[in-house]
Amino acid sequence: MSVQVKIPAVGESISSGVVSVWHKKSGEQVKKGDPLFTLETDKVSTEIVAEADGVLKT
Image (cartoon, rainbow, N blue to C red; front, side):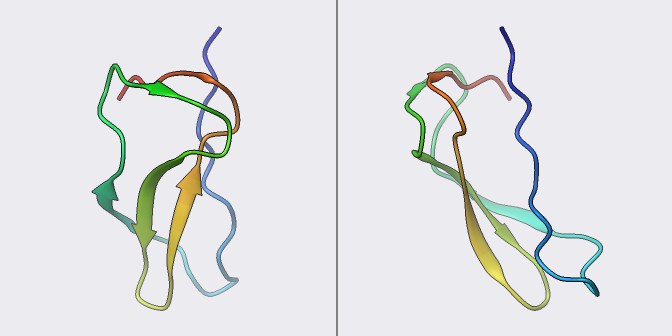
């Protein structure tokens, strides 16, 4: 079963961001709560974590 990674709302005035660092590689095992990547916008930088155990496919 696939689980899509959803980007949380980081602010009302922010409409785009960039994945600056991948913390896991495609094919790696992940556990719920593991950091997947860092999302950077012009105002904030935040880590996005896995919502479920599984294997990362990018």
